[in-house]
Image (cartoon, rainbow, N blue to C red; front, side, top):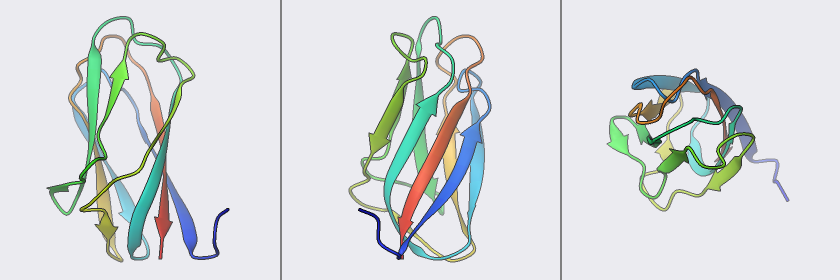
Length: 114
């Protein structure tokens, strides 16, 4: 059950198979308690490592792998264990190393608890 203190931010990595960073603006401070990730298309080979940073510091326990096997229409959840505090007017960086093949978009929803 969600409390009134939770809010949601969404973002997308346009292509997990191309090394890049995507930034998500944070309008209000809080603790990132969960992220929900969906993949819209399977990658054919390789594994893209997806990591997250806040203020240039890696979020502990927040990384995921976008694997070729079974990646289409897959939903993952991840709960960071530390370094997950976001500040008002800050940003969350979503990073892919581009380790998979063919273009595949990843949608990300962050749940922030104030």
